Length: 253
Image (cartoon, rainbow, N blue to C red; front, side, top):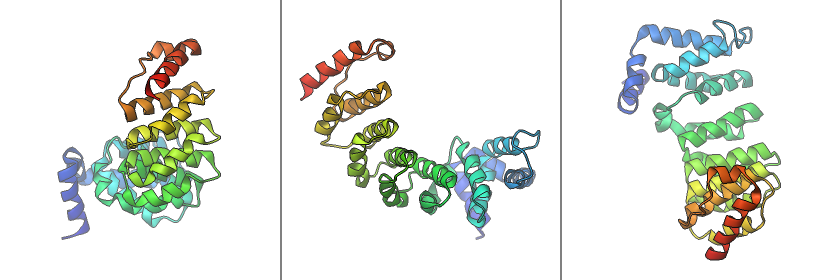
């Protein structure tokens, strides 16, 4: 059984509508041409047949485009080409076709090119690649806050309990977007026995409202106890939602 046949079977099972595209030889030819446009350094982004058009076509034909894009990602040594491939994959609404081979993307999180690493982290998160958990945990110690933030979010998507302690540590990160990402990941991971740590983070009264919102969501998730803060209250005077936070902490300590 050839590789193409195997992939067609996978597509038919996991992505039946996309498999119809994959069976279309004309679509296959258009996919090949679109990938060529995508990685050609002489093709502009916004031209009528430029990179943007190529990305749109590839994203609209995932059953035919996913595997050729992965093949290009693996074959290319050019960071810019690899980045364009990842940008195209990022536009896919559904990556089901790639889930059976999710762990082969784990190495992307350690890529030496920042752009490839950034989009690689996002990809392994969406694919819930278990082999990426260990390197992602290591990245929570990165000197770059964007890398720490994206690693935390990806770990939350993968939902492996091995990441629990690394994510909890980021609640005290110096960068607010990392703290918010850590809270989001805690909510996603549904970590048991972290009520005290979340309450401690809430008591610190983060100066960033978006961080407090993420902490509140995490606290509600791990305790099942709502705060009762409305969307309008979050955008109003801080004293209103802070009063509800204080009341919740008093009740749940």
